[in-house]
Length: 195
Image (cartoon, rainbow, N blue to C red):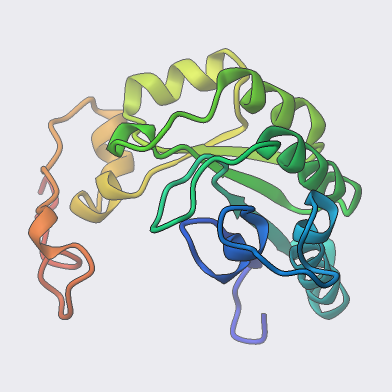
């Protein structure tokens, strides 16, 4: 915040540490952070409280990916209800936003539409959907009130002028998957703009 960022996104997805606590497939703890859904949610909720104490709830967002698959992480019995409870708590904290990632466009299981709808209704802040959207599907999701915002990852990496391209319905650069997660600028800062 001191260097001018608008806020912090708590990354509780993609197999990172926080999701390892949330996921019953990998969280085998028998203490206050494992054994049931409330305990598995405890770690992320404590982090949220600490972030709010440090920078205020209007500067904290959270990213989640129920049904995300990474190593042993994946769907588990009770996943829907656990995330419903987690999102209700996040809403009670009046976080800036909830960012829901669906990995189904890259081969992961789809987050069921009823769960997405429940989370949308429960969370009272800005609701962001991410996962394989293009201009048309993003506009459709917004028109159907499925989200307040749509996140774009790969299209933005390969199109530094993505907003202009979408405004003018212009062709997009295709992302070079060989450069994903690689060192250096290739694949990150060398894609051409329309001009």
